[in-house]
Image (cartoon, rainbow, N blue to C red; front, side, top):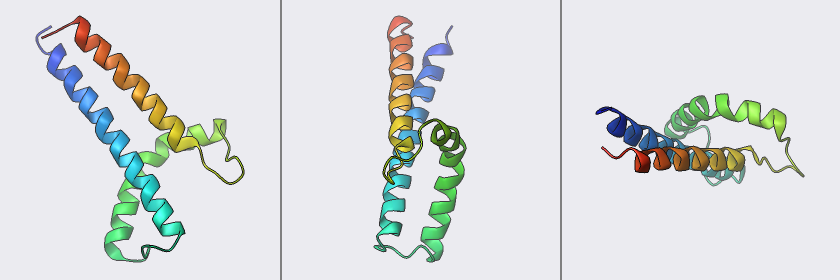
Length: 99
């Protein structure tokens, strides 16, 4: 039981980090689509590939459930809501089992 509290805190923080990286990925895609940043730049390409490799495995199945509506991809927003939900669940468990 002594490891449960710190483990739940780490899970909560990892979910927050994932949510942040997902938001950065969405913003990066928007900036690339409006040609604000050059997607052929080595640094941008590297960051984009990293963010794509950690978000697309989760976004892909969500896109099959929620198709784009009028050209808008709503799967990142749905995933953010799911992450918020799981953060809330972890937070409630932390409150019930204080370390």
